[in-house]
Image (cartoon, rainbow, N blue to C red; front, top):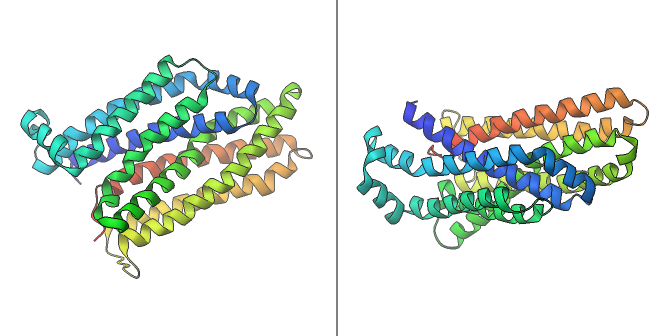
Length: 295
């Protein structure tokens, strides 16, 4: 694996991770049904969201030069303005890259200048920023109606994954708020809303993931020697472990909060942090998968 390939994959992963956090956190704050706790959580996450937005813009700007250098097979292409312009204006990658940069810049503007208490604005903008991700990569391998279906499925897969993973920091803040008696009723309502929406997101994620694998690999095209398929299997395993942890939290530990509070809260917090770490690993894997041939 070349240094250029690794740098490109890391940049892709950082760009996606920033969009995931911005969309998931903002969407959960907007849909949580807990206005006061939502404002508190938004204030607690403000610096993190700003940092994510800055990283998202920086990573998006790096993608085109790295794509150009990858095409040329030469780091020197990073400074070749003619090649950069050609890739930006005359390739499908460039056509997907420009709205990607615009979405990242718009998200940064919202984080910096839209006043707190309006998370739905950031949620919509971040969703628009995630949409161009479905226009490139393996979603661009088909034409016509199949290409459109692949892009729509890819968008659903990305949005559901972003909602689940990006909302976990908000969940941790609301879990902490639940421990204060004055917040308990509102925090309970928010946590139940998180659970309901999380079930929907995970279901959409799993079904769209299966559809994505079929669209990319085709039925029955399993090759144990394929680096792409081995990495895809690692992604699937990580996602299933995350799903298992979420189910354990929901059906084992949450019902025990009233009878085994300290143990249950510790277990839920620990499992959620592990989910976040596994999610970060999934995003890193995604960064590499988008650059690899599935054949």
